[in-house]
Length: 87
Image (cartoon, rainbow, N blue to C red):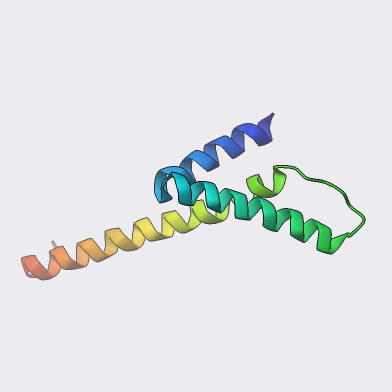
């Protein structure tokens, strides 16, 4: 149950930052990548679950955090140049 709740929160964050389509695509690719990695590690393992998606979604969420900080820094730099220096 915790996996589903955590996945729902991360999926919501990804969709909120990147938009619905890109967020769902990121989740789908994370899940497919997790299942492919599990198959490559153990070809006899048969599982098709959402854990790969849930484990893969922190990547896009972390990337969104880095993008947000970079945008804030760029805005501050533009503001500082416009106003004559940092305050």
